[in-house]
Length: 135
Image (spheres, rainbow, N blue to C red):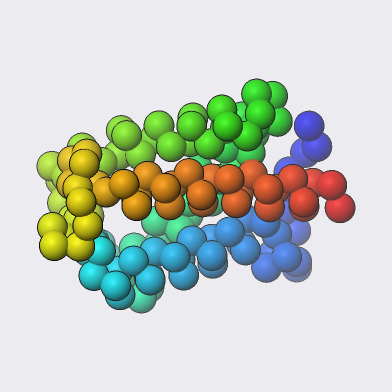
């Protein structure tokens, strides 16, 4: 596996920066659509706590690293398993709240659409890292 490096002069060409902006846009869309709201965070951008896009970069990178050894399906499922841990924590602490009228809730307030978005984001992250590592 190639070493992942970051060059501050080319920061927004870096996969992490691109994925972070993509994640911010996706999360902001979910908030604007009324699917969920975030709790009290000191710094939010478009209603999304700054830590959320950073978390997505880490999750998508984790999915990529696992996929290099075990394939994309295992990478996606391993990364998605983090959401299975996060949802109950978020539910009880108010980190985020799923809004009941939005869609069918199946797991600690989370929805089927959320599971599909998590898996889709992880697959996009894997493919994006693959493209960047093969340049």
